[in-house]
Image (cartoon, rainbow, N blue to C red; front, side, top):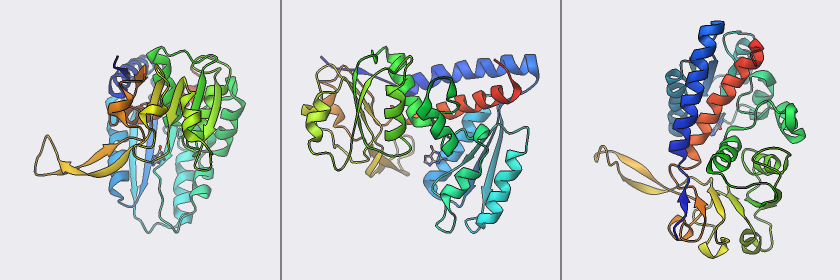
Length: 303
Ligand code: GUN
């Protein structure tokens, strides 16, 4: 039997509607709206398109949104001063510095300069530490792992006692999602294994997984025979494997995207699976909006 396809696009719409309704209610009651600034340094095409989508989504939800585009030559000192300005701006609840940054700027220094209470990416060491402790301590979970957990919950997959195998150990996806799935609480309480490039028998670990989360960045890495029948498969990979004419505008070329899992074969074995594109991808920006709303509620002490 073919797997249930977990549509990030559909889940995104449901969550965005919930956020928009809450924003409207808070605005009516408290005359305050979430404020998000995106800081983009340079004109990396992928970064431009991500930031544009973030700002468009914030606008649609009724946020106060600021798109602050900076020259690729901005000095580290000036960028740190800009962050300081937004740290002190009460109309801004979330600060996002789009990565990657140009080589002459120390990324770590920049991320550490963001007020942890405005760190809606969840990348500041204070928020990484809070996530590790878990429970009430958590302020902002990083957006992609938060989106993954939300998809698992909304699909109704049992996580308590489940064998979760995470492929990849990045700071943005692998490590935080592993940590989140082992915490106490809904959508968690799992037994977690993290596998990576030095793991001896990747296939053997994957075959045990009730929930397989793959964030390796290697197209087609996970073979269908590595999937336990009925497992939930979350494919975080977004690999550009070529170009094709756009369906909307055939004169324009668009990227051909492929996940880390062989989707067509895997969907005949898995119980549920995310597609690429249209799976985890749409969830990242959605959770950024959720984190920004959360930041505003913390700042305004709204329950
Ligand atoms: N670049 C690619 N993904 C992300 C993200 O989630 N946050 C930031 N700040 N930059 C990114």
